[in-house]
Length: 128
Length: 325
Image (cartoon, rainbow over all chains, first blue to last red; front, side, top):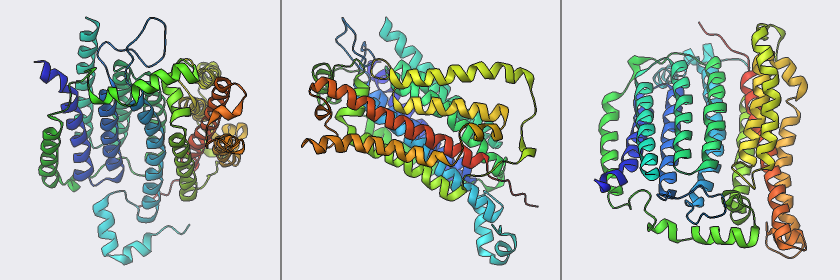
């Protein structure tokens, strides 16, 4: 029983990670793919924070009469990763916006079709 | 008893997360998926809080639930709202996902139990960080001490990444401009409610910035909170006014200034023949030097994050929508 509860978080993290991966593979919409990547990313964050947890521990802010603190190192890594994550997500979204402006679609299959049929692309390309 | 309660909350929140992601796989309306993702971020922030990671929870709540949702919605405005269901490759995805998941499950089988104080991760570096923070830096928040001092190089790199991401978005989308006709409708209730809230958000942002040494918080969170105050102003009162308060043109400069403050703090220790980012050199009293160094570095991070986040928002919201068909 203890073994199952102790590994519960890892199992759920892997389930979340695979659901994110599934969205990336199965959906052909670029924005949905980016959301899938973000879900994948958050599941990695949860994995790291789970590593840092100590049962009965306290948040790593020093106070009197407390000896056990959870591990601060994963917290530092993930804290910066979250902000870097949103910055890179915004670069991805900016690229998607430019793709939409050039092709008129955010659907990967449509974009592939347009690329195969180049005339269509030239006709609808934005001039700016 | 308290440990058990933490586990119960953990299990409930994880169940919520699974349900939210499952729903967003099925739903094809990207507007709904974006809102679900905001909820997903907020629930994961609660989970981080339950797992003792207060600083991470703070960041995830401000960034994930706050800014990312606004960003995704601005991107949806410029693209299309609905996903084409006919273009789903479910058959391709399922076997890959099941295989990878099974391999990963096999991999985690010999991990130590969650919360085990004897796990290897808790016996390397972490005890040193906790001990040295009390001895050499003397601030209560260990996360801030590790972030700004022990692992200052790492944080410097991450600040540069954020700055570069802002520059990349600027190159892709430009700063944008606003036309009068795009202004939001006048809504008296929103105006009255939001105006005092903005003041509170900005004061809270400053508190988080300067109280980060003592409690949860720091430059990363403060930058995002401060930027969201301006984003809220821009959403409710219109971007014309927001751009008068903070013009888009000064934001790239502020962002660069933030990175520069961080870098110069590092260089100052080089000048006094100490390693890069060794704050002991900043003052005759080593502990005082550490305090000063952390304050300066956090200010640089806060400024860089604030201006980059606001710049990214301006880039998306100021872009003109191109209509097809």
